[in-house]
Image 1 (cartoon, rainbow, N blue to C red):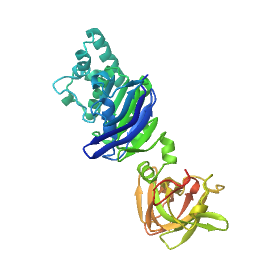
Image 2 (image 1 turned 30 degrees about the horizontal axis):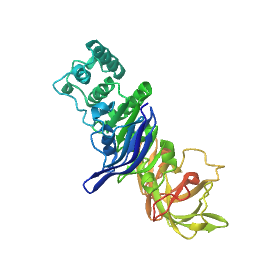
Image 3 (image 1 turned 90 degrees about the vertical axis):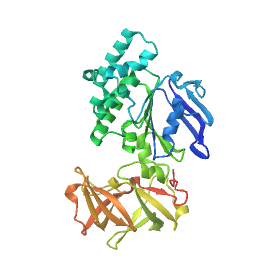
Image 4 (image 1 turned 135 degrees about the vertical axis):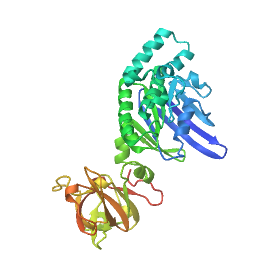
Length: 372
């Protein structure tokens, strides 16, 4: 069994705490993504698992075995790096075979493994080429192939797609996901790209300053972020954060939005189980995603959580299937995702439908979500 356990793991570099009391359990065959901004501790957490760094405190287990003092070569892991780390003087076949040869695997078995891995990654026609003769995507496939050839219990990926262009990143994301479906091996994948995290992961751990701020399945992280950091980090374009005051009008609790044309709109906040009596008259931060402020995408009638507002268009950003419209609400620039056929031009007033069913409220002091 190739489950992974971080039990109160801390890593310090002098006075700098890179990983702070990390507690995490990764199930056998699970695809875990560690995601966060630069310096959040995600790569250090991966290197601790690989044995490339030594934990200052805590216990790391692979299966039921404590591996804190186990050398990297004996941990039954394979790692794919951002830099590919291929031997430039060897061809693809030799790069794939190198790790097996050093472990004295029989020659016939090496040839069989190379053939299987090359077919799986569609690099059979590249076996006689050297790395300098390969594209970035082909080099990354070879790096993955070298890891696959070892048939490890765990695969570790350290930002493997960072050096690829946008189109190749999309293609390689699909390759990696298909690979996991085929081999069904535990994978820990580190990235700063939240799109990679959302599309690849069975579960995501969002890190900042050495801490895990939320650990859950992708959709749950997107719909119910634990705090302002997670809400702003996950999602593209980012969630809108609008300062508001909780008010009560005709027995309904909600917020007032003042739009760019000087108009005011009352929007009820009525999520199931959310009690706002304690917050009446107090400032909160309302979080709402761009797709929840839209126009022209679907029928709005009959939805009690849908409310119409009007604001003045500041800027348009066409993206093809939709257009991002920027407006002012409560003095903040807010992004709306709009059907291209429904847009108005900058400077013109535009009616927008706001879906409050998934609107979130955050405490401006603690930055935690209200009513978790």
